[in-house]
Length: 231
Length: 336
Image 1 (cartoon, rainbow over the protein chains, first blue to last red):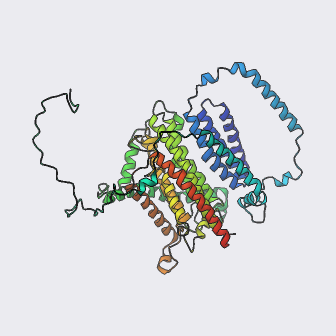
Image 2: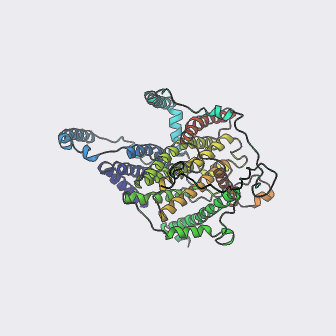
């Protein structure tokens, strides 16, 4: 009973926040609603017993992807009146595309059939035999489909290298810090062992020279020159 | 009585009682951490520190808290109100809910869940939101700059923290925090994984925005960074959240590397001391090092901070992860 109540509560908040993502005026609020939607999706996975997926969803999407997203959106200076300018002109095209997608969805859903054994698989993330769903996922990814998994990783690596190659440029005239050389240099810097608390007691240690007795300051003859001061 | 305790309301009452039993000592610890930090810093700089309010200045944290509560809450006119108020609550709340899975002793966790390590990692990666939202909602240049710095910094250091955690998990074979500690019954992980221990601790400093990585606050250049517009209780929540996060990261270090509730050796006088005392003592040791680092090192420059995270820690932790996996596999020590 409590589980189904929680399910409906989280599902309702998820849908509401998903609607707010597309309808809120401020893009930062949109991203924050997106984060709320991720959280509720993670909670739904927890209810279904898939705790590993729930945590990974929070770590990857909320903890990393959405942070960068928010980072970018906050720095953009978006003018909304400008964005809404062409709304009247593009509305018919948008409506046509939306209508086509809607019709396609109807076609797909009208011929939709569940696999006969799908009902048994539902809400059963643990394969049984005392295997947790973390171990089950690991077995599928790293034992059964290892090569496909590695291939997927390779695709991501290529994308990453591509992004770096596109943005990397060798600027001339920049002065770089060579940390190894800086740490390894000798001669100009020396370490001195100072006894603890020596400043409080009179010990025979290196001390800054005593300040000279204050001489009577000569009356400054010229105001306005030199050290700024009063005008 | 037994029937009541197993009813839904009874379970709720027990859970609330457990949460209070953990959170009240935690908040007292946070209060005395601020006192301890000032005393330790003072001792390292040959000063006296707080010594006026109460004996040895012991009532200073409460005096500070009262003073903070008496102040007026100021919300800047250009601020995004709801988010401005939400940010400190988020920071404080996240620092508190992470404690639900921390095992103080064998079986003494409020929620002993299967994926405890991932839960903690998820919560600590959410901490950045309090900072970003505060910086953006304040509608102030300094706060925004601080928030941007913090976002980049926290995301960078999370990567190496992730690899360190994976290395520890390889040696344990479970994501459950209690299992992680039990695996260290004979050897604490900081001995075989010493380089990872160092990387984890330094990353924890960066993750909690502590010196020498306290660039988001940077009081000499950004006034106070992301919370410059905050006052009164909302400032207090940020402050409490930061110190609670320090204690949390120390607890995580204790669990992952310092053997949790186990004494250093299983011999007579040491085993008389109960587990929670060992746990708290180890947390206090980590906290002392946090403060010691603050008293010793100057602040990093921002490009140096990024270089350390991406060009030093990330490749090294990746290398050590592969090395650990190879050693465990070749020697057959890989836990089933």
